Length: 165
Image (cartoon, rainbow, N blue to C red; front, top):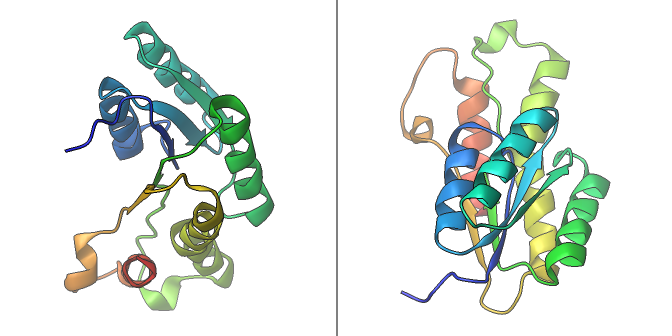
């Protein structure tokens, strides 16, 4: 396996949870990480401080990855700071736990935007901006292969992510 030392990764939705775990693991492997967050600046800053304290390098960048202009700015900021992007991890996501009949239009639009459109927007940017031999990791869910009540909208967005992949 090739060394990851010195590579640069953008991890969407990475101020906490799975994304934070991915950021820590990549930083431990010598990857310089871009912590993307939408609201929780304090968690993103705390994660960057933790990574820096362990000898890693990172920046926290606020960007709504459901907004194409914000995605472009996220990539611009990463390139300005690190001069390259080697890895994109699409982790941002939300869960809508409702039966189809209960879902309002704005809720459906939001889950589509966060879970699916954001992946499209970041993949489109990555197609033109990842360094040669760059890598993309799209995080989906096992719910795409099961039938769980109240997971319909969420499962549909994750199935879409798998198809984009």
